[in-house]
Image (cartoon, rainbow, N blue to C red; front, top):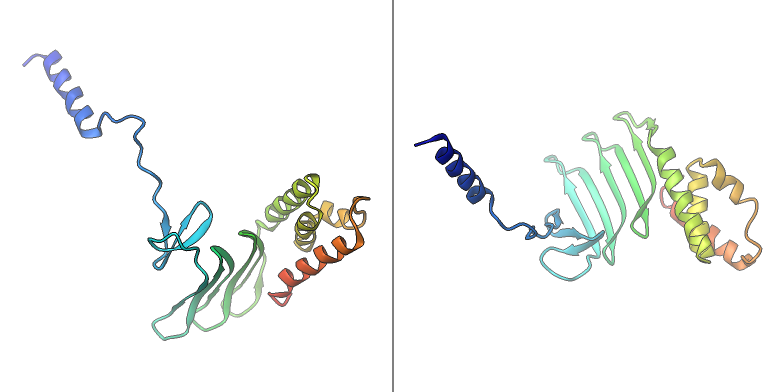
Length: 187
C-alpha cells in the first residue's frame, strides 16, 4: 500500500468516524437537576412543558438541611445552602430570574465578603437604566435600588434625582418592591 492510499484511507476513516453531517448539530440538552430542568432560563418539571413551582430540598446523610431552592412559575426565587454543622453557608435571592443578593458565611457563622458583588451591582444598575430608558420606571428603579443596596455609587446618585416623568406613586412602588426583595434576607 502506497503512502497516498494510506493517507486516503486515513482521511476516509476520519470522516466516517466524525460524520459528514455539517450543520446538523444536536439540540442543546436541558440542564437537569432531578425533578426539574432548565430550558432558556426557565425551570420546568423534567420532561414536561410545565413551568415548575415548588421547593426542592437536599439533606446531608445526618438528615439536616444541605440545600433548598424555591421556584415560582419557572423562576428561581431563592437558594440556600448549609454547612454540615447546620449553620447557613450561602443565600441567593432572585428577582425576575436575575440574582439580586448573594451572601455567604463561614463554618463558624461569620459573614464572608463576595469579590463579585461590584460586578453584580454594575449589572443591576445597567439593567435598571435600560428599563428606565424604555419608560419602565418602576421596574428600572427596582434594579437601581438593588444596585444601590449592593454598593453601586451611580445607583446611589440616581436615587437622589428621578426622571421628571416618574410619578410619586411609581417611586413608592419601586421602593416597596426593592425593600421586599432585600427584606427577604433579613438584611
